Image 1 (cartoon, helix red, strand yellow):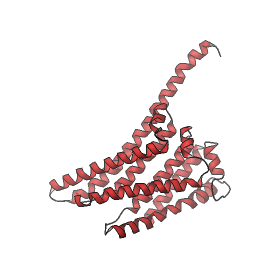
Image 2 (tube, rainbow, N blue to C red):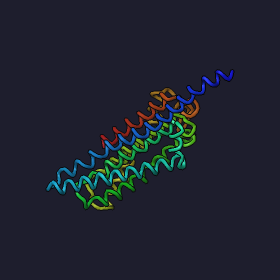
Image 3 (spheres, rainbow, N blue to C red):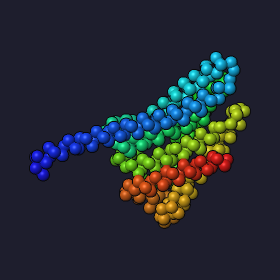
Image 4 (tube, rainbow, N blue to C red):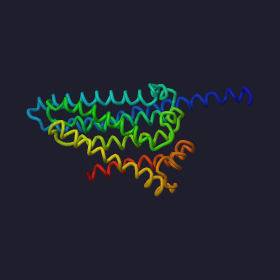
Length: 263
């Protein structure tokens, strides 16, 4: 290629890189914005039943502030853990896969926080905060356990700008967040009963296994039936098949909504 051609290609490349950087950053911010819109109404609504209005206002501000703080800390921690603190730098580099993963972290945190901080009295706020920590730990454990179903490493694929892997990963995080959020619902009747009910509700996460291996891989995508990995792994990690990953992510969400809706 001639020097003139190189000169002409450079601006286009720079524009493409700038667009990718902007896109990755927008994905991250959009995920956080949607998480906030999920959180704020859920935590403010119960406080509107409090009387007098001065107490209702204090209740709403306290729960909204605590929920937003918890959301921010959870999202920050998830983003630090996934790529060993490099997610933000990957987003600034224009890695759209990192933007998708970061958006999934924010949305997952918003879903869980919306369930944990939906209280109608300041006396329950410390319990809400404690359950949020418990719920986030449970969510991390469930995500790690579920990813054992795949042979590829999420962090490596996302660092390698694999949009399909990022979409699959975000789908798992969101679906499990729906299940964990549902698990913390209900009146607090003491720690033993609450933790027992929480643990039993987490068993709904088992529904995601047959959804991945049977419904998504075999019935929808037509891949051979396997216990773990298989053609679905190859489609996402090697072929970077975005359609397959979207079907997988939507399958997870559908299963989570169905399981929690029937429970």
